Length: 391
Image 1 (cartoon, rainbow, N blue to C red):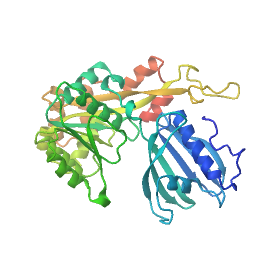
Image 2: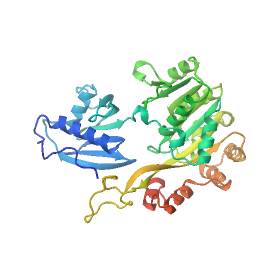
Image 3: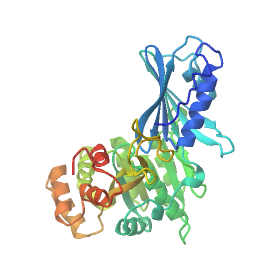
Image 4: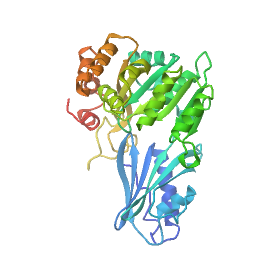
């Protein structure tokens, strides 16, 4: 586990500077640990702080509450959020610099609970951290297929998976690959929120209260002479219809969707009342992915116990870093893609669609995970955590 971040032995909760020092050490420690999210949660008599590291939420500290010191109020002040708007969710942006490192952008979300406001902080990737397709860890065949999709002039690539499965990282890598291509193309994104900034493309963030809704953004984006469009997530029928329409009118579109498999993704599109013939015409491919934590190279994946000291590399978790496992089906006239669409037209279930993909010889996520376990890169406990089933 990461070291304590509140240093409650040095400051008393009744100290008026306590909240300021807690927030300072919390955010600094989170950046040093490589955390992607920070949770500050009020309980009846305590505050709890947790970091999400390599996709797993870990409690790192707990300290007594005080009526005179509230770390969430301090975070709201840093983000310029009004403290008088109690009892309602709020969102805002803040920046934080850790020692001599580059200032990092963060997004703060406030949510009211029975014990007071809780805070969730998403730490955005540094601008220079956007990776290329070759750096994501996909196998060579998947890389080649993704690059082929990126070189297309129209169509729609959907990246599917649960929260924290690396969908946004893959989408940014695709856009970065396009932006670095030999032929310059106009790339425009519509995101909520923007998670990383890529200087060579145009990115925009939805602002419903200011009039920049998804529908308005899509209408305007088409008039911006954009050739490549990213809509960060398919959340509803309106979004799905807008992106599918753009993919059918000469735009190359990228999006993510919360779905557990390729079959589940296709069934969800049908449930959104998108015509099957339009899906078949516009959809270029579906990439379904997960991220598995890798065993720590220094301690061999052995978590800390009472007889061993904490590993500085993995902070005592036994894991450090993650690797993707993925299935990619392209719908470009290939036998597998055509067989899947024929089954979709016949109203087959998601599991039946996935079975067709497996019967065509495509390795399942479980098969890929098993190979990583056999190679000693991860273990069965991590596979069960991610896939929910034993090998």
